[in-house]
Length: 66
Image (cartoon, rainbow, N blue to C red):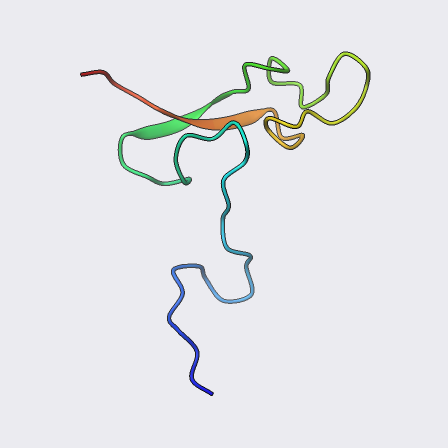
């Protein structure tokens, strides 16, 4: 069965949007920023993983204005 082409390099998982992301990584006009929920720590005040950034402390936001 033929497979469809993928934009991800072989043997690497496809990027996905975290709940706090506004765009996919690498999208023109978007950039990495600190998570506004956990302040970039990846950890909530109760010690659990931040659900907004999935524990990375980083999210992708649109940049610029208009």
